[in-house]
Amino acid sequence: MAKLSPLVAALSTNDVFAGLGEDTLAAIADLCVSRTLADGETLFLKGDPGDALFCVRRGRILIIASTAGGKQLILNVLGSGDVFGEIALLDGRPRTADAVAGEPTEVLMIRRADFKDLLRRQPEIAVRLIELLCARLRWTSDRMEEASLLALPSRLARRLLKLAEDFGDEIEISQEELAILVGSARETVNRQLQVWRRTGAVELGRSRVRIVDRVQIERDAGAAAAEDD
Image (cartoon, rainbow, N blue to C red; front, side, top):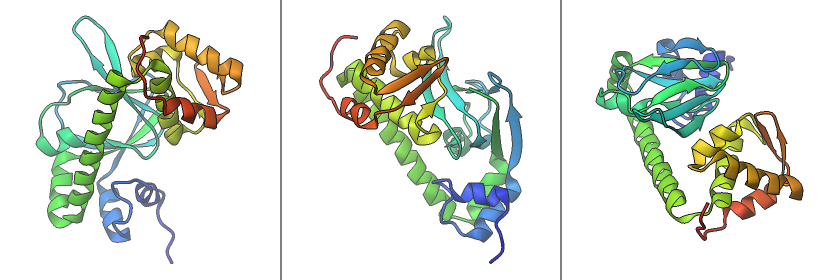
């Protein structure tokens, strides 16, 4: 059996492209353009043309919503294998948020015109994209439920567990970024992290959180009662 190229192997681990077959994956790989970003470099801004689909090959991408007054909300943190930009890719409308590298990052880019042509030739890819869009809707619904119903410890525990899925139990993220991600103040997030540190659930470093006792974090993630932050 022929060895897969590194790019095809990378695509084969992604939820959208996995299971499509080597020939289809090779066709997708032929369309990919690699782009590297420095820490803090902007990939695109809200309002930019939705002309490409992206996949994180290595590194970290922050999806950020900003207000005219400069306030920011981190909508999502994406790691290796995550696909983004699919909504603007399909409807051709402007980007709905900013995408910024959270560390030195490499992304794979597929241009909209090339991808639309591929969809006509490989309709099974469209099914994968529909599944991805459904997952995005469920994720958005979960975030709204968290913000409305869950206390900070539960929201923070859920975010840490989700981040650990992409980055492992040692997560490179600042407390400021975590606070924006869960919609709370940095000081409030710090107090909860210190509680977990004292109980041995996490270890803290400079812009780093390491999950030590996953059972405790999972238990706190499951708590449902909302409280004031």
